[in-house]
Length: 134
Image (cartoon, rainbow, N blue to C red; front, side, top):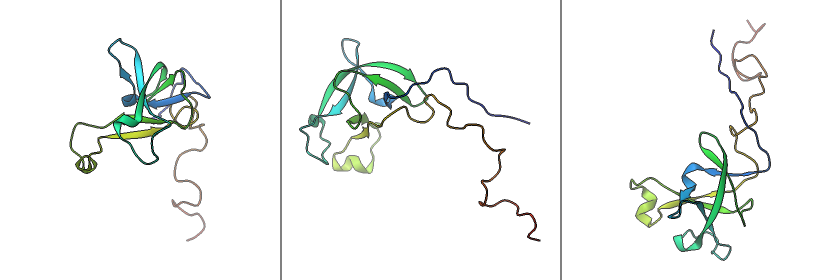
């Protein structure tokens, strides 16, 4: 018999988190992210439409890091660099993607998304063996 479990060391609510790739180190050693300027046109993602914001990093998960800083708020678009390989979107001049700030930490960043309910197997009425239908 085997079991898979998670040990929660820290938990936070009401914080902002971004993917690791969105956080950069500036020349002076501070951590920064690039957020879309409010004056940027809707639907446009030109590099000039983003501004650098100094952040303080907090808790981390496998893919996300908590950030705080002056002017950051839920709903801001954050620039995330893509891999250096050529993708179909790069042929059109697009080299970066954006991440939209959401409220709270992403799943797996504190809290227990799997409350330990149930005993495995398929959810009810979703397949598996049916008793009494022989």
